[in-house]
Length: 538
Figure 1 (cartoon, rainbow, N blue to C red):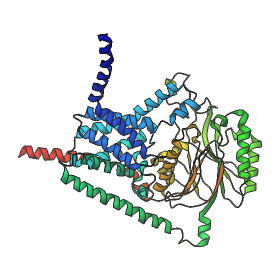
Figure 2 (cartoon, rainbow, N blue to C red; figure 1 turned 90 degrees about the vertical axis):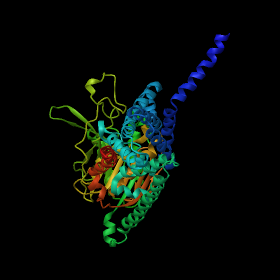
Figure 3 (cartoon, rainbow, N blue to C red; figure 1 turned 45 degrees about the vertical axis):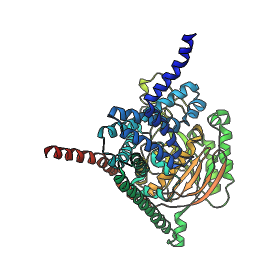
Figure 4 (tube, helix red, strand yellow; figure 1 turned 180 degrees about the vertical axis):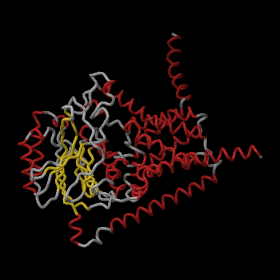
């Protein structure tokens, strides 16, 4: 009797002691969850600032770099576990994996991405900057960690901190200076000041200084946003009427809303194809370009002359070419078939189709990295048994109206690659992103849309985004939404889209910003070491 009673109370006591010993780990884990509220569809940046503030405060109190790394890891694990939870739909519902395996894979991805936050915690804990220097070191170090996440091992820059400002249209305009990295810095800077305020009685004087600096920084950012908005807007009304007409692209976006389960089913292939033909055939009024989403044509059009003729006939009737996603296949020099996820421009002339092949493929979604090291039963999540091959790189699609910057799905989330595309020859006048977000969870759709908006601002190019099940939308060079087709409906959106200037400070300076962030991280530490050495010498 006594044994059972003892056992009954021992477990809760152990649990309480365990939680007590790891209260900071639990706290930063919950802070990571809270910070997700900053992203679409919630758009609550104050929650992200609060969550990041808790992390910075906890790491600044860490006794060693190992402790800082652990705290960073737990924050990152919670943050990415919830932030990437939409992947469960891809893995379980569309990938056919058992839910248990799907959760495990999601956890492994979250843990892998958490290593970058662990690096942030380890370095911040190792540098041990004076609390008054946290607003200098912590934001820059966070940006460095995101810079690495965007590039290493193919990169995965989904949900960078700067995307938490998505709803703040004026503030977003600083993106044409420093891109998403500068906006991430603007997110973490107030969080670092918040962390400093946790000890306001001890650090009252630096808190007053940094509070004033924070207000001035955001005042300048907002002021720049207002000035830049007026500047870009005024470029268009000042043009002569004829020039404006030539510069406007009359585009029709077609969102078929094809269910992902049917999209690749051979028995529904004709039905899906007919839906896009019929919807596009209903377009009235003059149009310069019709855009269909990623793999709207879900078969090899090269091998189907009849289907080619139907698309060309539609193009002739509309007096406009059709830009669509479609799988393509070529033979290499050894006679082997190579498969591509492509965008093709089809018109009524019957000339060879202009084509862009996707360059940045999704690991395990479109190809298996290091396939020779994986067992044969490991297959990619998308349809088909063969891996897709990479295209030649970020290249513009030449068109008589101006260069088109083609981006297939995942490619739009990489700022440095979209920058290369925007600077390509011939001069790019529009960015067009075709995607199929149907195989993601619902939360991914507005998040993916937000990232497309940022690319328009960074490069001052309009973004035309067409998705199979939504969200399809058009953004002007200021990132302002000109129109949209909501998620999970079929529809057509006709818009007049201006040409973009395609020239920004971000494009010229993007490779060099990383050196500024490194300087801001290590300069205070070096200066502190020098000061300590001088004090010892005295």
